[in-house]
Image (cartoon, rainbow, N blue to C red; front, side):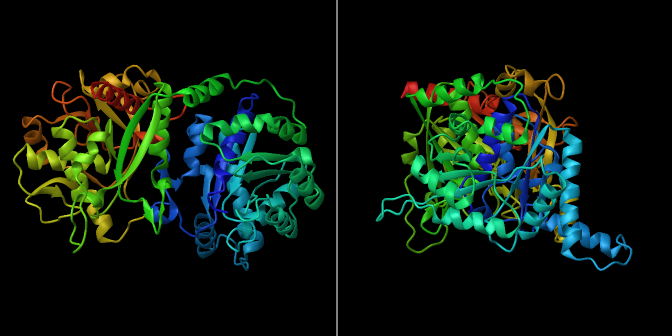
Length: 550
């Protein structure tokens, strides 16, 4: 089922096999008909992750990159929409020579062609393919058919791993194996037999339950791996190794391990587990609530990037979700507006990316408070744009300044859409039409941004001296017509595109504010637990100073 942990299982399995000396290649298959994840509602789908290539994809791709510390190519992601569109377009151009084009074999063949293309490009030793959705759904049946054919063609090279949830009903108090038994039988009906079962539950699987599952599913009990809930997802690879998962996989594949090296990973997990001194961060966003529940998956990369930085600095991260709409009355008759002074209890405030009008004035009110009261602030994408809007209104004297995304008639459009984007919007071309993927940025000498990046050679030198490469996902930009006036008012644009046209990083000098910085790009997409992003580290260092002053 959704959220059971297929993505972190794939990532963790990849991590422990990589630690055995193999080159890993993770692929994600999503069964929806969207061609990519870019046009999906984040509350419904969760975070949209962006690759260097610019492909907008599922958040599990972010997990793969974080666990394996690699950049994944676009070939490693597919949706039903991608596959069907390719086959239909090929049929329309007579690519099948007038044949009757059925899902089987043509859709399944296209799935296998894409898998082979990924393997050929990455030249990996082992590929791990995650099929999204739930066993028994109509949507992903064609992918199971492709998997069955793959096993038929390569009987000794393909294993099946089932990730299944074992519930413990509160009133019963006993772990139930029946849903997993049913899932195995459903897989069997597709012609697929699982070689390994990852048994997800809120507590470890006991031997009795392993034996029961082994008897009913015909999977040896030593191939049933306990996967209990953990406070820190980076513990999962270590838990898998306690059950000998990598050895089991390699034995089934008849491959000898080359090495065993999880030392850096163990040290990282230990630092996170043993940290006791807290750093409290308020995340002010708007994609949190779905009914009576809070959906933190919308900002999962931001959360993980903060965890990475906190772990590296030996701090225990405490996050609070703050709805931007609570800080400004947006027209509701009985809306209760929270006092901004409640933000004083935080060591730092982060405003992540987003789209649309709801919550904008609440975010601007928050930004005004943290700027004037010198609370460390980090703005990502929309959080950077709204910092520019707030500064334009309150400091640069540009009354009514706004982004044209919200107010097309603003007298001071300090944030505006690029001319090349306007034609796409006019033609209702929304999917894949933003500035997407990796772009270089030139850092200003002596800026806070440069000071943050320079210690991290891997990022700072990626695009040459004084340049960094970061991933983008946005349509609106700082309007070049207002840059000079904003700079005259004291705002510093410390990162720009190589041609100087696009503003990538904005900040205030350290003499004026301990940390007030925003990025047009999404640095969270390039952070990993073993290599935290330098801007997140710099932000948390500033919050630690703030905490000590308190």
